[in-house]
Length: 84
Image (tube, rainbow, N blue to C red; front, side):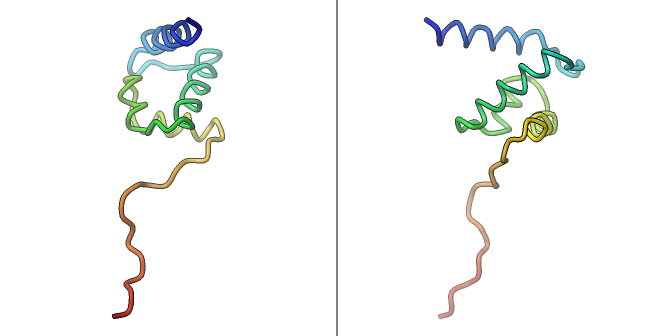
């Protein structure tokens, strides 16, 4: 029951934040804490942006302001080629 109530509360916060509207004060702190928790649980910045209806840059900035250690990009990296 507690988890469901928490999920509904988060949904209400996202609903009240209209795209492009300024987020300040307690609402900004609450949103930043929610984003930080979800990001630390494995959600991507893009997924959080889609969920909240905000831009990638906005979510990135909120996470950075929250002191989150951002993960590196996924996928293959271009390392040194092994000698044949």
